[in-house]
Image (cartoon, rainbow, N blue to C red):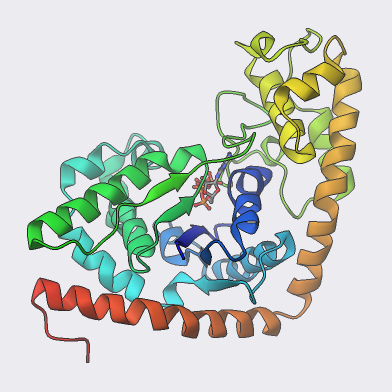
Length: 334
Ligand code: AQP
């Protein structure tokens, strides 16, 4: 069976973009067609400084979000990255395979490092090599992600291909991104040109998975829009990024196409559409928030799930790392 790997950072504020662009699709891939492994990537999170107590809390909360959204520890391997040491071990080897020039082209690095790139951590620069290791240490072939991760997945293929070429082996598979659904790129509620993001300083820009019904309704009511009514066809959303975003979110949450949503709401004002969207969002998200709160009440259950997940993961990652060491010419892991 093909193997699926994906992850998210425990950097706080799991949001609707993470849910629609990633988590929900991960849940759908659980089952007999794929072996699924989902990770909390704490080693990625610390590429920018995290308060230690907050990192621990956010890691638990992310795991609670995974389970509340429908990831089932009986069907998927759920892990915290730093608890499976082979990720970091393979990442070092990939640091030696990847080229500086490849990393310099990564738009996420440019965005996150900002103007003062000299002051960014070395880890932030090397981030995509660790991501390649996360995936390839399982020989995963399918990686469900949002649009924003496409470039990193291309780099993962480049690293696999260069490793195979440099060592004359057919060892690491070339991975396919799986980008699916009506909302592969959910935008900020305050600015239709920016993606919804955990690290946006404005809490009004995103719907958090922990938001209650009042907060969700308020954020949608205040979301930026234009004064025009909704068009009757998708083509009418061109050059209307904020309107498009809200329609995309509605379509994704209701499992409809954009065309179907506009067939129902075309010609209507936002004064009508926004309350309908708020009701839908509350209906879908409030039960997840409630289950997250329950799981966070006593985190021993989460810790148990992650310990078990790490044990299962290492039955896959330890042999692959051992083979990698052998290919590279290192002595076997002790
Ligand atoms: N706005 C989004 N729309 C659709 N998918 C999204 N993803 C993130 N933002 C959106 C997808 O969520 C998964 C996990 O993302 P991550 O935790 O690795 O962090 P990120 O991509 O860096 O997300 P953020 O929220 O934007 O965090 P910050 O603000 O820290 O950079 C990925 O599959 C991603 O595609």
